[in-house]
Amino acid sequence: FHAAAEKFCSVGSSAIQDGGRFTVALSGGSTPRGLHQELATHFSSQLQWDKVFFFWGDERHVPPDSSDSNYRMAKETLLSKLPIPPENIFRVPAELPDARQAAAKYEQTIQKFFRLGPDSFPRFDFILLGMGPDGHTASLFPGTAALQEKDHLVVANWVEKLNAFRITFTYLVLNNAPCVMFLVSGDEKAEMVRRALKDPGANLPCQKVRPVDGELLWYLDKGAGLRL
Image (cartoon, rainbow, N blue to C red; front, side, top):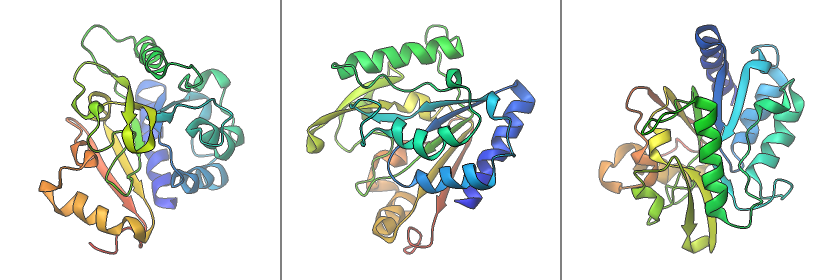
Protein backbone atom coordinates (compact mmCIF):
# COMPACT_ATOMS: atom_id res chain seq x y z
CA PHE A 1 0.00 0.00 0.00
CA HIS A 2 2.88 2.35 0.77
CA ALA A 3 4.50 1.60 -2.60
CA ALA A 4 1.16 2.06 -4.38
CA ALA A 5 0.65 5.40 -2.64
CA GLU A 6 4.12 6.53 -3.71
CA LYS A 7 3.34 5.64 -7.33
CA PHE A 8 -0.07 7.35 -7.11
CA CYS A 9 1.55 10.58 -5.93
CA SER A 10 4.37 10.36 -8.45
CA VAL A 11 1.94 9.98 -11.37
CA GLY A 12 -0.27 12.69 -9.88
CA SER A 13 2.53 15.21 -9.45
CA SER A 14 3.65 14.71 -13.05
CA ALA A 15 0.09 15.03 -14.36
CA ILE A 16 -0.49 18.27 -12.43
CA GLN A 17 2.85 19.65 -13.58
CA ASP A 18 2.16 18.77 -17.21
CA GLY A 19 -1.57 19.45 -17.51
CA GLY A 20 -2.71 21.24 -14.37
CA ARG A 21 -4.83 18.37 -13.06
CA PHE A 22 -4.77 14.70 -12.06
CA THR A 23 -7.70 12.53 -13.17
CA VAL A 24 -8.20 9.32 -11.22
CA ALA A 25 -10.61 6.39 -11.47
CA LEU A 26 -10.92 4.51 -8.18
CA SER A 27 -11.88 0.87 -7.77
CA GLY A 28 -14.30 -0.84 -5.42
CA GLY A 29 -13.90 -3.82 -3.14
CA SER A 30 -12.09 -3.86 0.17
CA THR A 31 -8.43 -3.87 -0.95
CA PRO A 32 -8.22 -0.13 -1.82
CA ARG A 33 -8.95 0.78 1.81
CA GLY A 34 -5.29 0.20 2.63
CA LEU A 35 -4.17 2.52 -0.16
CA HIS A 36 -6.72 5.16 0.84
CA GLN A 37 -5.57 5.08 4.46
CA GLU A 38 -1.94 5.32 3.39
CA LEU A 39 -2.67 8.35 1.19
CA ALA A 40 -4.73 10.10 3.86
CA THR A 41 -2.29 9.37 6.69
CA HIS A 42 1.19 9.59 5.20
CA PHE A 43 0.85 11.34 1.82
CA SER A 44 -1.58 14.16 2.55
CA SER A 45 1.06 16.80 1.81
CA GLN A 46 2.39 15.13 -1.35
CA LEU A 47 -0.25 16.35 -3.81
CA GLN A 48 -2.24 19.49 -4.59
CA TRP A 49 -5.55 17.83 -3.76
CA ASP A 50 -7.61 20.66 -5.20
CA LYS A 51 -6.26 19.62 -8.60
CA VAL A 52 -7.19 15.92 -8.24
CA PHE A 53 -10.45 14.76 -9.85
CA PHE A 54 -12.04 11.49 -8.76
CA PHE A 55 -14.18 9.08 -10.77
CA TRP A 56 -15.05 5.39 -10.30
CA GLY A 57 -14.22 2.52 -12.64
CA ASP A 58 -17.26 0.63 -11.42
CA GLU A 59 -20.11 0.90 -8.97
CA ARG A 60 -22.79 -1.31 -7.50
CA HIS A 61 -26.40 -0.47 -8.31
CA VAL A 62 -27.09 1.01 -4.87
CA PRO A 63 -27.60 4.51 -3.40
CA PRO A 64 -24.49 6.44 -2.29
CA ASP A 65 -25.27 5.90 1.41
CA SER A 66 -25.46 2.10 1.05
CA SER A 67 -22.82 0.03 2.84
CA ASP A 68 -22.22 -1.65 -0.55
CA SER A 69 -21.43 1.62 -2.32
CA ASN A 70 -17.89 1.99 -3.68
CA TYR A 71 -18.36 5.75 -3.48
CA ARG A 72 -19.28 5.58 0.21
CA MET A 73 -16.20 3.48 1.01
CA ALA A 74 -13.93 5.97 -0.76
CA LYS A 75 -15.63 8.92 0.89
CA GLU A 76 -15.19 7.45 4.37
CA THR A 77 -11.59 6.30 3.93
CA LEU A 78 -10.12 8.95 1.61
CA LEU A 79 -12.22 11.80 0.27
CA SER A 80 -13.46 13.09 3.62
CA LYS A 81 -9.92 13.07 5.06
CA LEU A 82 -8.24 15.26 2.44
CA PRO A 83 -8.89 18.83 1.22
CA ILE A 84 -10.71 17.77 -1.95
CA PRO A 85 -13.34 20.20 -3.31
CA PRO A 86 -16.78 18.55 -3.67
CA GLU A 87 -16.89 19.63 -7.32
CA ASN A 88 -13.81 17.44 -7.99
CA ILE A 89 -15.75 14.27 -7.08
CA PHE A 90 -17.78 12.58 -9.82
CA ARG A 91 -19.68 9.62 -8.44
CA VAL A 92 -21.86 7.23 -10.44
CA PRO A 93 -25.58 8.12 -10.04
CA ALA A 94 -26.25 4.53 -9.01
CA GLU A 95 -29.33 5.43 -6.99
CA LEU A 96 -31.31 5.71 -10.24
CA PRO A 97 -33.77 2.80 -10.50
CA ASP A 98 -32.62 1.98 -14.04
CA ALA A 99 -28.97 0.90 -14.07
CA ARG A 100 -28.74 1.53 -17.82
CA GLN A 101 -29.81 5.13 -17.29
CA ALA A 102 -27.20 5.51 -14.53
CA ALA A 103 -24.51 4.19 -16.88
CA ALA A 104 -25.62 6.51 -19.70
CA LYS A 105 -25.60 9.55 -17.40
CA TYR A 106 -22.13 8.69 -16.13
CA GLU A 107 -20.86 8.30 -19.67
CA GLN A 108 -22.24 11.76 -20.46
CA THR A 109 -20.53 13.18 -17.37
CA ILE A 110 -17.20 11.77 -18.54
CA GLN A 111 -17.69 13.00 -22.10
CA LYS A 112 -18.45 16.50 -20.83
CA PHE A 113 -15.53 16.57 -18.38
CA PHE A 114 -12.99 15.43 -20.97
CA ARG A 115 -14.68 17.41 -23.77
CA LEU A 116 -14.79 14.34 -25.95
CA GLY A 117 -15.76 14.42 -29.59
CA PRO A 118 -17.49 11.55 -31.38
CA ASP A 119 -15.58 8.25 -31.33
CA SER A 120 -12.97 9.52 -28.86
CA PHE A 121 -12.11 8.06 -25.48
CA PRO A 122 -11.16 9.65 -22.15
CA ARG A 123 -7.57 9.38 -20.99
CA PHE A 124 -7.60 9.11 -17.22
CA ASP A 125 -4.14 9.75 -15.78
CA PHE A 126 -4.46 6.86 -13.33
CA ILE A 127 -6.89 3.94 -13.14
CA LEU A 128 -6.90 1.72 -10.07
CA LEU A 129 -8.22 -1.82 -10.48
CA GLY A 130 -8.68 -4.86 -8.31
CA MET A 131 -9.08 -8.50 -9.26
CA GLY A 132 -11.77 -10.83 -8.00
CA PRO A 133 -11.28 -14.53 -7.21
CA ASP A 134 -12.89 -15.33 -10.60
CA GLY A 135 -10.48 -13.04 -12.49
CA HIS A 136 -12.96 -10.19 -12.95
CA THR A 137 -11.84 -6.58 -12.79
CA ALA A 138 -13.93 -3.42 -12.44
CA SER A 139 -17.33 -5.07 -12.99
CA LEU A 140 -16.22 -6.97 -16.07
CA PHE A 141 -17.16 -10.49 -14.98
CA PRO A 142 -16.51 -13.71 -16.91
CA GLY A 143 -19.24 -14.51 -19.40
CA THR A 144 -20.95 -11.09 -19.25
CA ALA A 145 -22.00 -8.87 -22.13
CA ALA A 146 -19.76 -5.93 -21.20
CA LEU A 147 -16.65 -7.92 -22.17
CA GLN A 148 -17.65 -7.46 -25.82
CA GLU A 149 -18.69 -3.80 -25.61
CA LYS A 150 -17.20 -1.75 -28.46
CA ASP A 151 -19.32 1.41 -28.45
CA HIS A 152 -19.83 2.66 -24.90
CA LEU A 153 -17.46 3.97 -22.23
CA VAL A 154 -19.75 2.96 -19.36
CA VAL A 155 -22.36 0.20 -19.33
CA ALA A 156 -24.79 -1.48 -16.97
CA ASN A 157 -23.53 -5.07 -16.88
CA TRP A 158 -25.91 -7.81 -15.74
CA VAL A 159 -24.04 -10.31 -13.55
CA GLU A 160 -26.07 -13.50 -13.33
CA LYS A 161 -24.32 -14.99 -10.31
CA LEU A 162 -24.91 -11.79 -8.33
CA ASN A 163 -28.45 -11.40 -9.71
CA ALA A 164 -27.67 -7.71 -10.09
CA PHE A 165 -26.52 -5.01 -12.43
CA ARG A 166 -23.09 -3.47 -11.99
CA ILE A 167 -22.12 -0.19 -13.63
CA THR A 168 -18.67 -0.38 -15.14
CA PHE A 169 -16.08 1.21 -17.39
CA THR A 170 -15.42 -0.79 -20.52
CA TYR A 171 -12.05 -1.78 -21.98
CA LEU A 172 -12.28 1.28 -24.26
CA VAL A 173 -11.59 3.41 -21.17
CA LEU A 174 -9.32 1.06 -19.23
CA ASN A 175 -6.98 0.50 -22.16
CA ASN A 176 -6.68 4.19 -23.01
CA ALA A 177 -5.03 5.23 -19.73
CA PRO A 178 -1.31 5.99 -19.42
CA CYS A 179 -1.14 4.22 -16.05
CA VAL A 180 -3.28 1.30 -14.87
CA MET A 181 -2.56 -0.34 -11.52
CA PHE A 182 -3.90 -3.65 -10.26
CA LEU A 183 -3.82 -3.74 -6.46
CA VAL A 184 -4.30 -7.28 -5.12
CA SER A 185 -3.93 -8.64 -1.61
CA GLY A 186 -4.51 -11.95 0.17
CA ASP A 187 -3.32 -15.51 -0.37
CA GLU A 188 -6.83 -16.51 -1.50
CA LYS A 189 -6.06 -14.58 -4.70
CA ALA A 190 -2.64 -16.21 -5.23
CA GLU A 191 -3.71 -18.88 -7.72
CA MET A 192 -5.74 -16.42 -9.79
CA VAL A 193 -2.81 -13.97 -9.81
CA ARG A 194 -0.59 -16.77 -11.11
CA ARG A 195 -3.10 -17.59 -13.87
CA ALA A 196 -3.54 -13.93 -14.79
CA LEU A 197 0.19 -13.31 -15.13
CA LYS A 198 1.52 -16.69 -16.27
CA ASP A 199 -1.24 -18.36 -18.29
CA PRO A 200 -2.05 -16.38 -21.47
CA GLY A 201 -4.75 -18.90 -22.39
CA ALA A 202 -6.76 -18.45 -19.20
CA ASN A 203 -9.03 -15.91 -20.94
CA LEU A 204 -9.69 -13.92 -17.76
CA PRO A 205 -11.36 -10.49 -17.90
CA CYS A 206 -8.39 -8.94 -16.09
CA GLN A 207 -6.05 -10.19 -18.82
CA LYS A 208 -7.83 -8.05 -21.41
CA VAL A 209 -6.60 -4.91 -19.66
CA ARG A 210 -3.70 -3.95 -21.90
CA PRO A 211 -3.14 -0.20 -22.20
CA VAL A 212 -2.39 0.69 -25.82
CA ASP A 213 -0.11 3.57 -24.86
CA GLY A 214 0.63 3.27 -21.16
CA GLU A 215 2.02 1.17 -18.37
CA LEU A 216 0.28 -1.75 -16.66
CA LEU A 217 1.32 -2.35 -13.06
CA TRP A 218 0.55 -5.17 -10.63
CA TYR A 219 1.06 -4.35 -6.95
CA LEU A 220 0.76 -7.46 -4.78
CA ASP A 221 1.25 -8.25 -1.14
CA LYS A 222 3.17 -11.40 -0.18
CA GLY A 223 -0.02 -13.46 0.02
CA ALA A 224 -1.22 -12.56 -3.47
CA GLY A 225 2.24 -13.27 -4.91
CA LEU A 226 2.69 -16.66 -3.24
CA ARG A 227 2.36 -18.68 -6.44
CA LEU A 228 4.67 -16.59 -8.61
